[in-house]
Length: 617
Picture 1 (tube, rainbow, N blue to C red):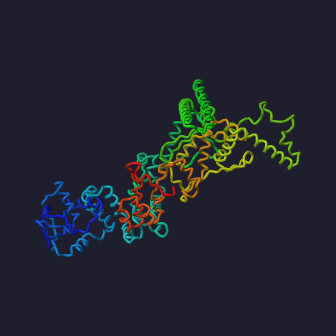
Picture 2: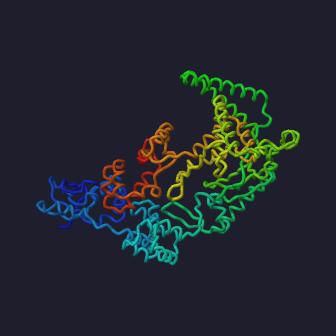
Picture 3: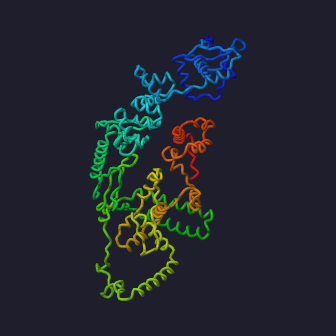
């Protein structure tokens, strides 16, 4: 029997089967709906003691009514539509049937939202009536405006919700349908849809798009596209973006030409580097006060002596602490010296130049001291009198060697080699320089160069690109690039082999340490944990915090796992009902859930979403 019952006469029944409540978002939507439209579906009640009625179906509606009454938006005794059943009815079946609903297809929701706008409601009105965020309303409206034929395809599960989202970057229905027709046979994926629809558009949030800027682009008449679901804005006119970037770079270059006296100034578009046949010069110290020089030299001597003492005594704690304090003091002085007296000389500027560009974050970059190898002055290959080396007016011994047999020549070389090996045992500093020189020349020369004339050793850069041809760790990549930009590589441009070795040995020890550290890092081979015990030991020694360099996302990790593996891997990390909630959903929904959890702003560095890493790390 249908009847109206005062709200203050209704209580929840123990026979209501719902135990796990709906999500907070769903509860907010229900409250907003009741506040706007009233109770659209009867509660099911049975008689109770003291004139009350027990609600066996409609507990969420009852809770929403109490919430509104407590806020004063409805009366405590407002009439509520109810269907009264006898106490001997099959109440469990009634409650179960009430709590099981056929969910409305998302496509129908999207279209319904669009119709509300057509009927005159604003985004704010819809958000208020249904208790959802305005951003969510905007997204649903965008989905509802996709070509009707594509919405029908989505209803028939021809493609995923992620693909439907991708179509919203363009509002031209003909273009959307043409895109679907071309890609549906083989490569209908969200990223391919966006690429097809956007063409060569640039993202506003990074690189050349950020360098140009939204204001300048719009002022020049450029058009925008947006991706609500990725919070991205695209600059559609790529040619205009490139022209604006070129104009800004040229303006910056003109400013430099007025204030600097470089041999040349070039502009690059940010996608490439300076010429490969060039080296980056290092600024030189000029006008350093003698008092400061002497102080740094004294500290260097004291540090070297204390280092030797520490080595002999196996680094006791007291000497170790003294050594660290001395090194820190020396570094502080050197940094102060470099800050005031380190600059490119007029001579360096006479044959080198600078490059104006921008980085991946859209920031203006100025790379100074780039010298083409052909422009670098070479050391005089003749002796001090300007005469080629001879002995008694004859050719050098190397030319004379042609008169003896090759077998004898080879043996003499072996005797010489053996003697040099023995002599090197007494000069560990030179031995270390030879090793470091060989390593650095091969890694930094940009090409494989086997040093058979000095050491039987070869070193190569080890690539860190993934199977998708990307490192996927801009933090680590940027750190390596920054380190390389600070290296002194001018010695590599010296043509004469002996002069090149001498120039390397003449470098300050601190620079040689930086060169060697960088080159060792670039030649390092490290795989997943458990594959190589030595690699694992090194990682543990370094105490690498991988969270600072890499984060699992849907693109680089989550989408590459199977759904069962996703659920078993992350169920222990999420709330207890997470696996049950997503067990019947598509893999894409599980991936999106984990992507949002892992990439959302953490509350603290102790959050599991921040500290979790795959076991392979």
